[in-house]
Image (cartoon, rainbow, N blue to C red; front, side, top):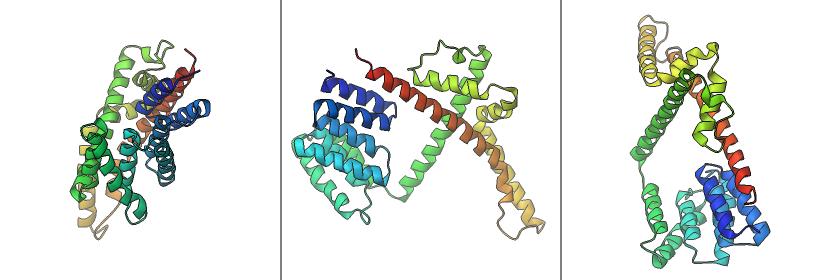
Length: 271
């Protein structure tokens, strides 16, 4: 029989890999086999909460409450539930938003110096963010996406120079990066994908050139009288980069889903 600790390790590894649905399946399987347990309810709730979706938030709240009904002092459940409540819209979910204060107070009474209390303090700081903080976060997210595409394109170029080793059966299918590299190499190796590879590898420079061309085109269109003020035509210069971003991102998502499926299967094997 698989133990609670083993199910917890399975949930943790799947959660770190981004497999939220797999985390939920593992937590439910553990409770089906071993019965209700606060640790597994915590993972089930986190697997829902990580989706950042209203329906999943409702399911996460149900799981948090079920876990706390078994162990009202469980630090992980208190911290996770408080974070969920802090994230709730006070107009749409006033009851959920109000519960953040009670949960936070209880956690800080039980373990003020714990890792869960530190995590909750960071969540409370995030909840107090303003407009400019949101703007900086969106800019940072775009920067991360840019680095992801460029890193993926550079790894592709390196793999092609090495003769496509990453596409062979020697790839460690439990290594997330290796799976993504192999999938990228397989999808974008043909000569017809040369423009995609070039734009991905030089994404930052291409964005700058696209921005300049957009500005120039719109300026020329206004000065020649072709448009009176605003025109979408100039922004078509950015379309190729957006398409390339979507192409690389789609390959990453498919490869990561494959990696999670393989990891889930490997973790489920009896040891």
